[in-house]
Length: 304
Image (cartoon, rainbow, N blue to C red; front, side, top):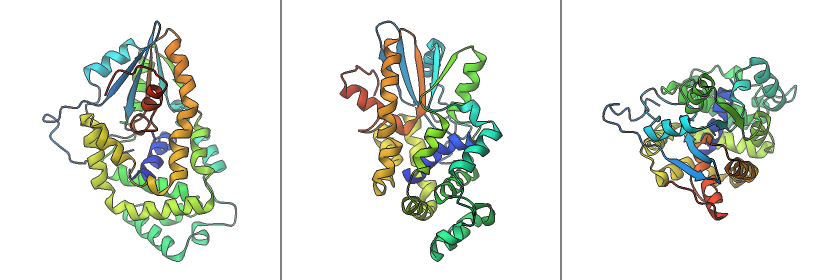
């Protein structure tokens, strides 16, 4: 959960990191009274229980009313609320630091200045300065994590609150209401999506991400508007801008993870209990989505 998808994927994880600190602005800032939000919700009925699937934004401005009557009803019915990763553990500073040290730092003796081209490093410093991030603080980071850090900072600077994302709100509600909690993968597994990129791949990702930063506010506005309307075609298009340049990363971010999630979701459908699965919206739209994969297996999924 998870932007130009090169960055959206980063921010999807970023909320996981922001939630690990691991996407999106006083965008369009339509009058909240004029905006009727209707984000998409899906349902699969099992032999006894059922599974609801709901797409999230990991960071949100305050005026988004994603908790529609249908979502509220699904949450109340659910016995188990399932997230991509263990959000509670990502809030532990020791856990976060250990994962960053293991996967996000360059080897001793290396810095971004030493591994990036002169032009890319200069653009990195300009972008970081514009966003209020001290360039020296990025130097020890691997290129993928530097890109993620700048992407999240841009989003936060635009008015999105990492404490106001769907997952954080649902987690607090679920704990307060005695719901059981589940996860689809570990935080370490999620980070390895990026950490196992080659140096060339992650450097290319940073380069393209820096190029896309200037265009991001407009794209985020369009993405959030589509989410609020339940406009899946526009949501898919905006969520995937940029990833076509990185087919390896797209596969790692989406299909490979979905292949691992699907058997777990099928067990939930058959379990006789009611589950509410909350994952980044990108995982529920498009041909590689969980929804499409379930339907391809003959599972009847109610919803758009």
